[in-house]
Amino acid sequence: MNTRTQNTPRKVLLVTAHPESRSLTASLSAFAADHLRAAGHEVRVSDLYAMKWKATVDADDFPDLAGDERLAVMAESGRATEEGRLTADVAAEQEKVRWADAIVFQFPVWWFGPPAILKGWFDRVFTAGFAYGPGLVPYSGAASALPGRRVLLSVTAGARGTAFSDRGIHGSIADVLHPLQHGLFAFTGMEPLDPFAVYGANALPVEHFEEAKLAYAARLDGLFTDEPVPYRLLSGGDYDHDMRLLPGVEDPGTSSLDRHVRARG
Picture 1 (spheres, rainbow, N blue to C red):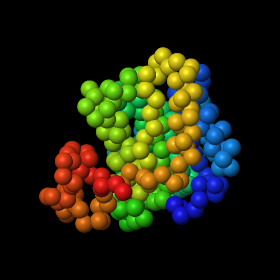
Picture 2 (picture 1 turned 180 degrees about the horizontal axis):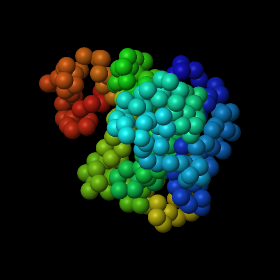
Picture 3 (picture 1 turned 60 degrees about the vertical axis):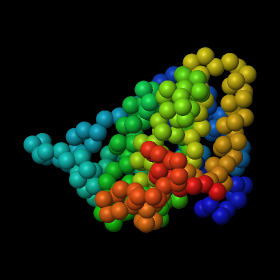
Picture 4 (picture 1 turned 90 degrees about the vertical axis):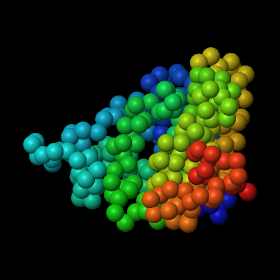
């Protein structure tokens, strides 16, 4: 995928989550869809609130489960995936993920994570047998479940950008989004890019919105050419049998989550 030029038409899934159609999130989602289509890409949109997406995993997701049977979510989702018994809404979203060369997620950061409806999309769509499971090696690129797909998180946050800097009170935006970037996307073999963020979103002046659109356009233009975050591969010899980073592998001066990112360049 990455050897083709940016001008080659691709397939992009845009997943957006905000309850207000006049929100900054909705405006950025519409801008992204229009910009990508103007560049020649095919775009599908999953607007989770408009779809009234069911966020919770429960027994209703597995109608063939006996009423008195204990629900083991991982095992049952694996069986349902393998046997084609997933509910129609989940199966439709999995088809979109398979179809896509890249996925752009547009959402507000609420309590240092995505809205519950988007978290529920991840919980229900990334089933065993589809995103992980026997024969699929996590953090291993091509040997993982969903290799090669680019991912861009585009988020809005009410706080100022300095609060999300490396010394900011909230920690860097990369650290805040690490559970998705590393724990979901890299785990399943996808290629997450550095996240794009618009700060001060609760009262964004018009001129700042215009600046944000220019910056967002540049990131969308690099969706297939920018270097992904170079997370270490589990199969790359950097980890021991218990998935712990070997001593001395990290670059000097790195700590915490940064240890799991290789040097760039």
